[in-house]
Image 1 (tube, rainbow, N blue to C red):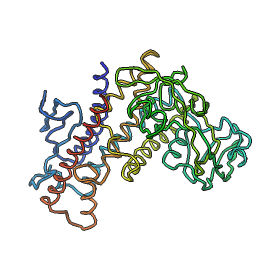
Image 2 (cartoon, one colour):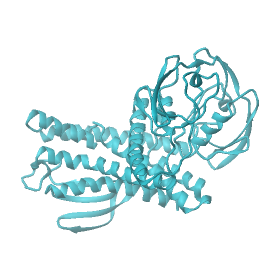
Image 3 (tube, helix red, strand yellow):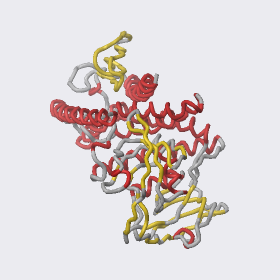
Image 4 (tube, rainbow, N blue to C red):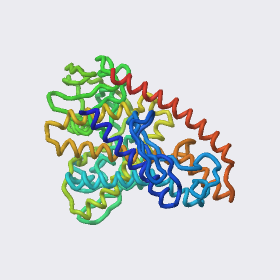
Length: 432
């Protein structure tokens, strides 16, 4: 059942993407030779108005094949016979439809459970936050010029922009008025550390990084293991773990950790390690992570911000990967997505069908936005690569020769296939 749910989820997202290409192609009078869901051999198909509609064996991917897309054909319905901006709209429509789907899903989720406004829930006296005149109840509006709409955006900002001794400009709201201040982070030269890497945005508390020589690593825990309890407190998501450690920073006391490795659950006791680091800085910022219901207008507005957040999350993650701060082994593909969907169902099924649906819809929001961004990357064989050639044609006032464009896309496709094999290997390795 979990596998079927994952296939259905991926299938809907891919279908919406290809539907965007299909509808804009039809609107612009382009002949669509085949519209398919899935890849590989056909399981079933039928033809209507010159278009073959197919369901294929592998439930990942899909296609909208258009006449004259990669070759010169003397036919009024050929893709290359249409104007530059007509072709641009057809190619861009796939990603645009994914962003629309992400928005619709965000409306459903936010309409049902609300928004995690970035409100300060604790400003300890003596902390950098307190000294900058920020108090409990204030709402963070921006950090270093970057707009903040949700509590989770604070997590995201400081994950990709670690706190240093550099001052941080904060805009906050109090009594419906905005104020600007500068926070000067304080050095915390001694602290206790567990040596783990994770993000608050994951559907479960999966360990994404381990530092050699620190407690988790020495206990034999590996990347991909999932923390399910800390000192008896149930941990469901990455945010749950972040909340726990915010409220209970590691000290010299032992901590009882229950974690899942594959299908096995183990419980161990670990002792945090004292670290002396003159370059460690802290703000003393504790903020809201719980959602509150909002009006329909606020739901619409915040759903736009939710799509923006997911697009930003994807782009920053790509930059993080390209910069070498994350390894290729941390990249997941369809098999990894199926695994995550299964974990979401496992963790929420006891709370009812409604919670399962909303949790999957929230994950699908990220997936749909992610697919939109990835397809717009200027990489040959992807939509973004095709858009580059169309833009070049608009600038040059003449098209790039089809045979040269085809070679570039073929090379790009071959490289993408190699990357898919690597990602598939990563996913399978994580399963075991």
